[in-house]
Amino acid sequence: MSAQTQDHEGFLQAAIEEAEKGHAAGGVPIGSVLVHDGKIIGRGHNQRQQKGSTVLHGEMDALENAGRLPAKIYRECVLYTTLSPCPMCSGAIQLYGIPHVVVGENRTFMGAEDHLRAQGVKVDVVDNARCRELMETFIREQPEVWNEDIGE
Image 1 (spheres, helix red, strand yellow):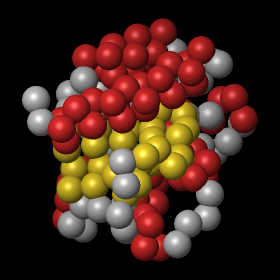
Image 2: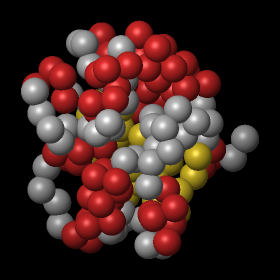
Image 3: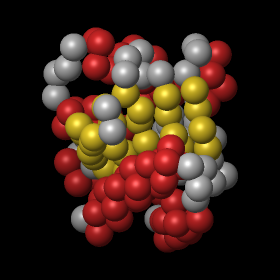
C-alpha cells in the first residue's frame, strides 16, 4: 500500500467519523474533511436537519469550519467526502479551485462528478463499504428526509 493510499484511508476515515457524528445527532450521514499539506483544516457533516439549514451539506460544513482562507490554500487542498458531491457542493469545489476530491462512494447517489472532471478536478472514488452502508441504512429508514436533502 502506497503512502498516498494510506493517507487517503486515514482522511476518509475522518470523514466517516464526521458522517457517524451527524447521524448520531439525527442528520443525514455524510461527512467531509478538507486537507491542506497533509493536515485536516476543516471538518464537517450534513447538518440540514440539526440546524434547519438549506445549505449545510457535509462538504459545505467542512468548508465553513475551515474558515476564510486565501485562494492559494484552497488550490492546494484535497476534499474528502463520504458521498459523491451534489451540484451545490461541486459548485463550491469549483468556485474555490479545490483540485482534488476523494469520494467514499457514489452507488447510493451520483453527484456532479462528471462536471467536476470536466472542470479539471481530479475525482477519485474509493467505493468504501462503510460509506455505502451508512447511506443505504439511512435511505431505507428515512427516505423522506433523504429525498428532501437531494431536492426531490
